[in-house]
Length: 205
Image 1 (cartoon, rainbow, N blue to C red):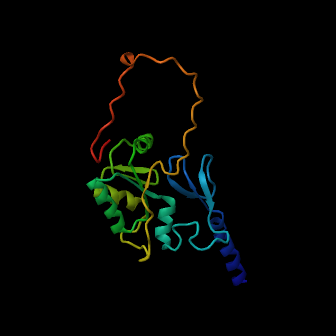
Image 2 (image 1 turned 135 degrees about the horizontal axis):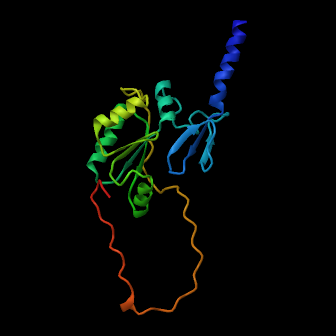
Image 3 (image 1 turned 30 degrees about the vertical axis):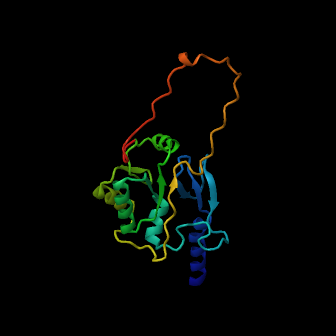
């Protein structure tokens, strides 16, 4: 009787894991759950006979770390030549936090960053729905503590972080507008001057 009860319990506990999905949210972040919402992209069903780690980058992590990473995924937004970004990245690696890094390397990336609603200061750290602008070590560690990330690294020695990608990489291009009827040429002297390009420092746009 005990073995039958254990078998039933094991099946009940395994069911949510088999039904779990991974997807890309509209803002480009990676999310996990049992039911992808409307607008989700790149939906992948975890498990279901796939090779270990084939679809789940968190496969093989200790339970506590895996649970935190699935419930509150970490994403780091950086830009080249940004010393605070480098310091923030090293702090996450030292603590053993699995994270996804997205970079701002073009005007399109900057516009996508601003659409997130957190301003243009970099680095930007998101832990689930919580956001931290700029690198403040105590604030970063506090939000990671609240999300349940272990205080010391539990990453396997062979863990390889994902390659940083531009924010707009993998974003579907906007549909092109319908071609307009050609207008007659205007005198160059009457044309308005082109807008000045936006300029900013390495950590603020």
